[in-house]
Length: 301
Image (tube, rainbow, N blue to C red; front, side):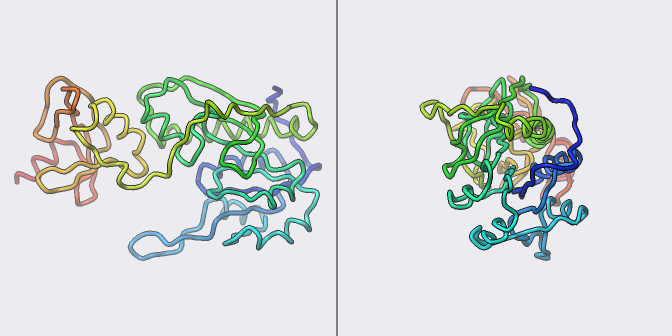
């Protein structure tokens, strides 16, 4: 595949779908290369924090900086007429967060191009990055596919695979895949539109799925998990939902740990494989991040 940087000042028009910060990297790359983005579709602003202040997706901020219209429909049918006014137009979707109905996909030529952060058909679903780390995978990657109304089931144009070190955290791997995916997306679009890059069907029999993460996924269970599994969860869920354990009635968030044969502090529990999860760093109830030793000293005082 030709991955050389080529500025596009004219040509096809695009509508970009994206909500998560992961998608912002692709939007910026498309704009940097000069692709003609006519609108950005993102989910409505959300309320966050104790003050319930409105928080806008990063793609909305980027679009505003480039004077690109932003559409935030509750239902995609609300923007059907807006899309029709721009036809012919191609869709690009990266971490939008909603299933796109067939009627909407059919409004685009040749459809909607989707970037997914896994080696499809592995890890169809909303948490492929975290799943790869949590399961101890030795490799991961990104897939560029043709979107269908079924979740992550469309034919794949292009995949990039690379080694996954066993020290990756969720936030770090997310940034790495966002950069790789954005570069591959930009390089692939021209070949997709001119027909030189053909999509190949996925093998549905090899498909695996990941679920939407909740706070409960971050609970550590020494009697149900091995120490290695717990350590992987800490790295995978460092951003969300974060891993927690109970120490003498206090819930603590773990940010760094390692597996050992013996405990180092009273915080270290034995897991079902007989190994200990040694807590190196945690977030105290005060919200401050500190070492295990510092927490225990503060608790004693």
